Image (cartoon, rainbow, N blue to C red; front, side, top):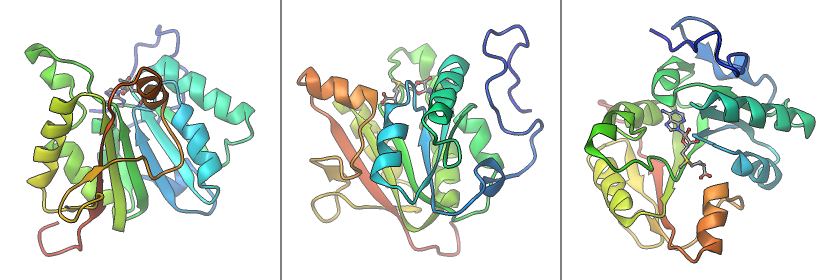
Length: 217
Ligand SMILES: C[S@@+](CC[C@H](N)C(=O)[O-])C[C@H]1O[C@@H](n2cnc3c(N)ncnc32)[C@H](O)[C@@H]1O
């Protein structure tokens, strides 16, 4: 069942995918031309704006579970004249991704500083997991990028171990066989990345490419 906000939620009017659980074409969400890129959990949205400037050909979709931020960033994008090529919808990425079509249509998927929770009881909230990876693998175009960054080394190790067990991705970092990157190659930073850099915190960056499609994935 698709997640519906309480109608009394102050941001219940945030833009969403069409009602129901059916498939939704990315072209329906952002009509026009240009390759699609997806940010999961854009938060305050800075990456969406910086990426629009760095990749003027791209159509950018953000899926943000917090309706307040989804609505606020979506409106700011509209005010900046970017509505035609960038939207943030108030959605749980784990529920929204299985609805998106067509397969092999995304040029990049970005996860910047996901999963800040530490406690065992918060594990069900984690956005990164096998279901999400299966959907990302389904949606990425051949050779397209999956880029993940975090300021928590244990989280980076956890993501690295999770992605390594998935046949849909090949590591594409600085050294052959490793996903680790010293720098962000996308010309755009998220608010959390800017903050981590300003605070002198290390940023752990992982880059993968979509593996050639075989029989299984
Ligand atoms: C730590 S914040 C990082 C925000 C932003 N990516 C950045 O780097 O500045 C994690 C973001 O992911 C969002 N988020 C968490 N779980 C999500 C889910 N299942 N679907 C969509 N967004 C999610 C949170 O609401 C929050 O905005």
